[in-house]
Image (cartoon, rainbow, N blue to C red; front, side, top):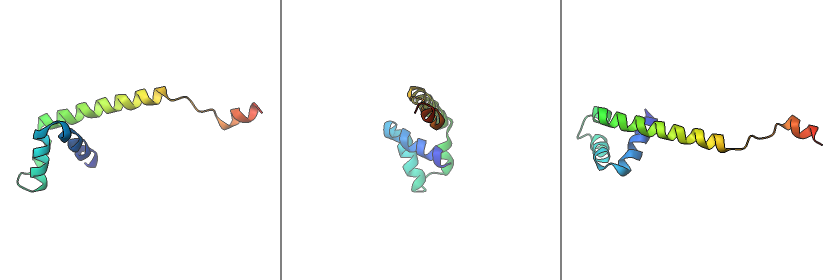
Length: 75
């Protein structure tokens, strides 16, 4: 749940409608299920997929650390 709300807040920076809905839910002027509209869920999922792909690319670009045993052999 916390990760979902983090994604909602991140999306709220670029999407004023999502931010407005978040503020209204926090001020209890709208029900909590407002943050689970299909449009919002799809945006959160899309953002999550993009962030996962970015993490995979970042991991692939990292050099593989040498194992401790390999470094001892070379001495």
